[in-house]
Amino acid sequence: MIDCTRDDGLWTLTLNRPEKANSLTAKMLEQLVNLLMEASVDPHLRALVITGAGDKVFSAGADLDAARAGLATSPLWEQVSGAVAALPCLTIAALNGTLAGGAFGMALACDIRIAVPQARFFYPVAKLGFLPQPSDPGRLVALMGPARAKLLLLGGQKFTADEALAFGLIDRIVLGAHLMDQTREIAADALAGNPDVLTRIKAMCADR
Image (cartoon, rainbow, N blue to C red; front, side, top):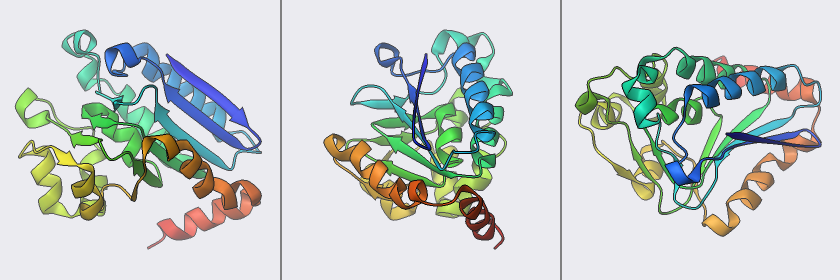
C-alpha cells in the first residue's frame, strides 16, 4: 500500500510493503497516480517526498508475480513518473535503500534524490527482456551521460551509493537515521515559500 501524510504544504508518500521489498503492484501504482493527481491540485503544496518503508529497500520494482502477469510493461509506470515530473513543487526521492527496476521512474522524475550509504542501484531490463520505461533512458542520460546510462541499462551493472553520487544519479548520501530530517531540511525553504514563485522557479530550471 501507499501511505500518505500531509503536513503544512509537505506531502510524503511511502511505499509500504517492506515484507516484499516494497515491490509494486498495479493497485499500488494506481494509488500513486491518484495521490499524485490529488497533490497536483493542492494549492498549498510546496514539497513532495517519495520514500519507502524499512531500512533496506526503497523498492525492488514490480512485484514478481504481477510482472509475469504483464505489469512490467504496463503504462501505469509512465503515468506515475509523468505525474511526478509534472508537479509544480519541489520533489525529493528519499531513498531509504536499494532502488531497482521499474521503481527508477518515480525517483528519476523527482527534482532531487538522496540515498542511504547501503543503497544499491540496478535496472536489469536487458537481462529480463523488457524495455525500460519510455522516459527513463532520457532522464538517465541527462543525469549521468549516455555511457553510464548504457552501463546501467545494457551492461546490467549494479551501482553503489558512492558510484551513484559520483555519476550524478543521486545528489547526496545521508545516514538512514537522518534521512527524513535531511529531506525536511532540503525542503525547508520551499515550505516557507510562495507556491506560485516555486512553480516559476521550477519552470525556469527546466528552460535550459
